[in-house]
Image (cartoon, rainbow, N blue to C red; front, top):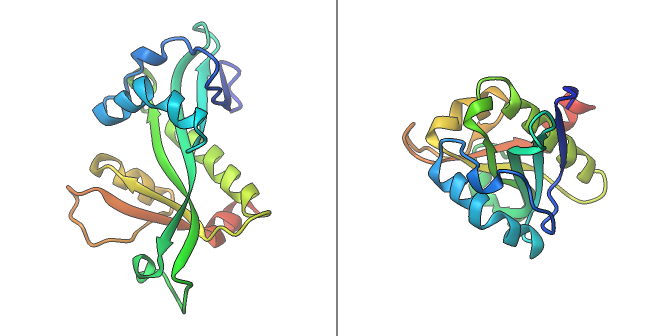
Length: 175
């Protein structure tokens, strides 16, 4: 993040983050995860998390995302596959992303996604990764589509959307 007001760092489960227990992004499931499950998930190595801290406000916890390893079935990728795929398709999964209500609409979500894409890009240099997968809340589907993700399922606009961005696309954007 280029804005000196904020610092983005890897989440440390041994650290206490200012206002983490009061985090509110307007989405109950994400809020509950941040308040009661994030620390445990990271400490048990189920995922890695990255947190945006507001340096002008006691390093307040104000945005985060989590990444984990994942596999998709080749049948999940029918819309995208131009040929045969192995039965299990290795990818990274963006499990959660949240931006505090007070910062929404300021491009923070895009900056967090940019950081996530850079991490996936770097990881793809050392391990096999076919792309980035996520389950998008109906209210976030358009956001992810605007970033180049493709919807893998045929659900309605009111359903959780299974979305994917290929490593080829990520590498093309990031070099």
